[in-house]
Amino acid sequence: MRLMPALLIFCGLIVTGCEEAPTEQSTNEPSANDSLRAHSAEFKKGVVQVADNVHVAIGYGLANSILIEGTDGVIVVDTTESVGVARKVKAEFDKITDKPVKAIIYTHNHADHVLGSGVFVGDDNPEIYSYVTTPEHIDKILQVIRPIIYKRSMRQFGTFLPKEARVNAGISLFLDQGPDTLVDLRRPTKTFSGEMTEIEVAGVKMELHFAPGETPDQIFVWLPDQKILLPGDNYYHSFPNLYAIRGTSYRDVMDWVRSLDKMRALKPEILVPSHTRPVVGQERIYQNLTDYRDAIQYIHDQTVKAMNDGLDLREIVEKVKLPPHLAQKPYLQEFYGRVDWSVRSVFTGYLGWFGGNATDLEALPKRTEADNMANLAGGVETLRANAVQAFDNGQLQWALQLTDYLLVLDPEDEVAAETRIKALTSLAKVQISANSRNYYLTQALEQNGLKMAEPNPAMIPDGMLASFPISQYMHAMRVSLDAEKSADVETTIGFDFTDTGEKFGILVRKGVAEVVNEFPENPDATLRTETFVWKEILARRRNAAIAFASGDVEIDGSIIDMLAFLSLFQPPEN
Image (cartoon, rainbow, N blue to C red; front, top):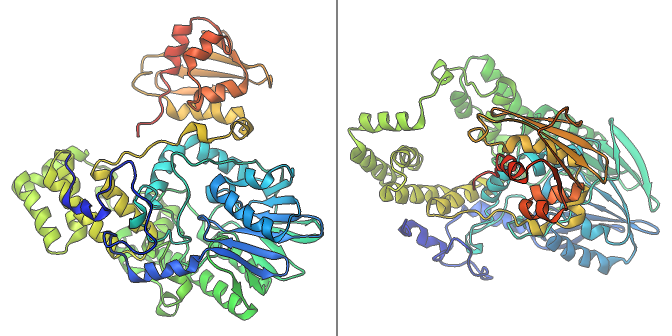
């Protein structure tokens, strides 16, 4: 498809990349909401000292990293999203002290808090603390739903936009993630359950409190002797992301409120979030946390009230807004989360996907609905003209919706594609939310032919790959089974991992792969190897046929049949 005129705003972008961003705003840069642009000041790059022994690195990546200095070592809270960012932060921390890292604390499982940990571990062999469920959340994201979370995260954070087109990421300037980003995750060595645990590291007394909110494994760190609170991602300078458009399980917002109440009760004097800048002063912090929890509870309560009053989801989204006294607060502006997304999330959290209108109990196939819309308009040409006219009239959302129908009917419809790109780009201009702005602009690029490169398997260190339990890899195979290819297949394969002694079976039954944590009876074939070899094959770092032929993988049965079995488990299409 030819380059659409609307995409000329992207500095003649080639889908594989573009030049480094200039230091000043480019004249080709897409317009942005003025408030969002001004919000970038929140992320001025540097290490801020908040107490004699506490420093926070801001603006180096998406998440802050916090240094706590003790008598004979340091504690690092959150480790950024990549090796590259972590190295820059650690270099700054090393200027402050050369004491070894005695402990690392993960406030939760999100990639921007854990994937740079190998850099901080170095040769120091620190303990790594987290909540007990953090490892399983990491495994779920990286093993089960990684392909779709990766793609949608790249849209949300604008990773594939040219640097000229980016403003900020709502909670920092940017996310340092992409297909060739080197990461190095080290798994927790000490976890806790229950409400709270007390630890002392390098003479520093800390309390780790379970505080579900943005994630169900969230914790906050409390330094009681200094009244310093590290809230993780349960507070930052923006309306909270009660729902993330990259995709997330339901975030129980009343759990979030209760966690904020626990923080308020401590009466902290210094607040050091894992995103955005520190807040100082007991009264100010108490007011901010109170407003934050009130905003979340207000959205929850008024959404539930409207549900119980019989309103449907669209009506509730139109009705529920923050009250003026909260909506005007600078730390509740919708730079990251949005109120309307939050309303939808609360609704679906209680009632699921069905909005209450019987019309929605069944859905027409996309092609049928598009045909019907074209017929209703008087034909495809009229529908196309209506889309163009809607854009010209400033009805951007309606133009966007009409192009959905047109592109289902003909994916090569250049007028529809150009109208869609212009609508997406125009909608992006007015967004105060960095997430929605980035998503609109990225989908404009995708409409023009951008194909997101998959993460490069070589960017995962051997140690990180080896650290994941083999059971996670085996059970994740279920969700990559090709149902059509396996529709008539019934076979059982036994797996024997010689280094750990673990055994598994995969039973394929006409479109379903059952994974069992034991060696199956009478398998049709057996595969015997070391866990790391199998992980490399599944991670596409090693060719299966070569591994079979080399003897690194022993097969009892036909190698051809085993390769045919593996071909049933296809990686998702990009």
